Structures are given as C-alpha cells and as structure tokens.
Image (tube, rainbow over all chains, first blue to last red; front, side, top):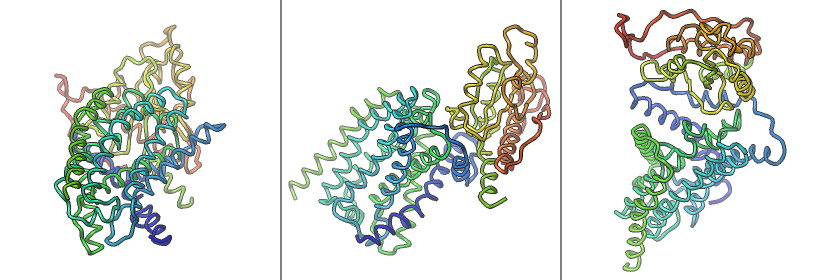
Length: 304
Length: 182
C-alpha cells in the first residue's frame, strides 16, 4: 500500500468521507430501531446530523491547565483512531493492505475506549471516574474474548492480513469466531445489556458527564465511527469474496446494516446488567467458547 | 443570514436536549414530563432527548415551587448548562407557586431567580402541552442563533384538564402518536 492509496482509503473510501455519513446513519438506525421496538415513531432521519451541528454551535465551559488540554485532546484522538480503523477495512476487492493490518485494526478499535477511560478520569467528576472505572473493568472482560476470537480466526487461516482473510472462504471455525465477536460488540459499543459506562439512570453520563459542545460532538462522532468500524469488521469477515467493486460495497453495506439492526434489537429487548454479572458473563460463559475456538484452531494448524 | 447560521437555526430547532430539575415539586409534573417521552406522545420525533448531565442540555426544565433548599441547586445547575440555553417552567408552581403561595418554606416563583423563557401552565400540564412548550423553547434557541434577542417570556395556552382517559371522568383517550412536523 503506497501513500496515495493509504490517504485515499483514510480520507475517501472507506475512510472519513464515506464513514461519517454512515456513522450518522447507523446512530439513527439504532435509535429508530429501538423506538420501533418500543412502539414509538422515533427520531427523523437526519437527527444525528442535527445533533452534531447543534453541539458544534454550543459553548464549552472554560478549562485551564494540562487537565483542560487533555480533555480537549481525548475526543480528537478517539475520532482519528476510529476513522483510521474504518480506513483499514478491506471493502474494495484488491484494495491493498499489508501483513499484520489486522493487529493495527484491533489496536485502533481499542483506542477510543482507552480515550473514554482517560477522559473520565481527567474530567475529575465523580460520575466520570465511576464510569471510567466501569469501562476499564468491562474492557478487560470483553477484550479477552474478542482478541481470542480474532486470534482463532487468524490462526485457522494462517494470516494476519485482513484482505487475505476477507478473500478466503469462511471455515466453520470462522463462524464460531464471528459469533464470539458479535457477543462482544454490545460491550464495545456501550449499548444494552452492557451499557454500564454511560448508564444514564445511575451515573448521569459516566465519562462524558463534564463534556459539552464541540467536544461532545466529537465523542458522538467517534461513537458512530466505532459502529461503522466494528460492524464493518464483522461484515468483512462474513462477506463472500466478490470481484466487482460496486457489488462488494453493496454487500458490505447490507451486512453492516444487518449487524446494526441485530445489535439494536438486542439493545431494545434487554435491560442493563450489573457490573459483576457482566464480568461473570464474559469470564465464565463466553471465555469457554473463545478458548475452544483458539484451541481447535491451533489443533487444526498442527494437523495440517 | 449566511448558510452556516441558517443550518445552526434549523439544527437547534430540531435537537432540543432537556435536563430535568425538581425544585420541590409534588412529582405530578415530573411524571407528565416523563410521559411526554413515552410511546403515546413520543417527543423523540422532535429530536428531544432527556440528558443525564446538565452540560449536555440545551433546555432546563424546572418543576415545583422552588423551595429554599432548592434555590442554590437550581442556580448551580443553570450555570452548568452551556449556552445558548433556555429555561422552561413546567406547571403552575414555578410560575406562581400555585397553592403554596406565601409559604415560608418557599423562595419561588422561578423567575425571581432565573430568566424563564417559556411557562407551561397546568396542575399538572398535559404531556402535549409540555411538548408544545419544548418546541417553543427550541424556537427561541434558534432565534438566539440568529442573534435576535427574544423579548418577553412566552406563556403557553392552557390545554384542557384531563387524565389522558385513564380515569372514569369521561375524557376520550387521544389518538396514538402521529408524525409531528415542526
């Protein structure tokens, strides 16, 4: 991948120019699906866009010192990391990529949640600190399963290159891995039943409590981009290999929307779990499947 | 008015985020405010979101006759809402202190302490009256984006008494949520 294609992927497709409207679209899909499930009509189509513009026009409280600078910096880091993660997705056939870009994608997907933890602590609000502590506990719990699932997929197909993974036909083991990723996504995207860090009835808005105006707009945007990146990862792992570029894009979008709908339905149908139940769920229930997937992947690799 | 200001006006009218503050209310208005977000009235069609943190909110919704205990808290929260902001007094209590008038425990009415933009009268006001008041406040916010200073606080018309058809008073239950256009 040379510099021009890398920039084109980061800025145009599937990067910012494509991902930002789709981030808003996915945020709207989630709210609308939850509203429909509750028998409401729900927000209009352009709602996340209006929210974003309105937040850009609001004031921010004065912040001073290093803490204030850090508070301004965290949402920007989160947005750029999430945009970079979207840019790495191999949507177009023969779009390039490099050996090990899966590992970079995982790191970039993890950065926004690191930023949320840091943001809650640097806001010095008690609610922010509780939210950050919850986010930290949650990310330790689900990341073990998430990473084991990715490792099992990569080990079964002998590559850490995303494009190669997307082109190879899916084995039964990969479906097991995709299932484990799907179980981790609600926790990664902070939606029910694992919406613990931003539990608004308990701790106001968690790490976001002290954020306002354009900074909050950046957090909303990074959340939307996380949706695009996380559902896009599932879509690239499940999509069959298609040589025609427009058909590949269409299939990618359709699969992403399907994952968004699935997650929204789960979010609307469940209530928030307590933190101990959540941690127990990931460490006791899901971990077994992840370990099974990894061990069978390694076993298959030894036999072949 | 350039394009950006127009877009900002448009967005502010369509995305009012609320923060709810209880100033010694009997809980009647609080229940009606929550009812306006439920499936029957569905204020989310207008982009309304009830926020957990005053920092995120555009509109401060105050209920209750403002007791001495609540005054400082309300002033603090008003300071924490980032501008441009609007204040809605929900119910008759924050407007006039209602039946609690001349009580020695009260520091109300609300407009002695905060600049109120919209009064929604009623004891309690109906959820549709509250939604109308929120829409009016969002319009005021949009005018502030266009740098027009609004003159007097707006008093919303009293929407008839009723119980939403829940009791035996004979009031017809209203139709289910319909698409509302601002």
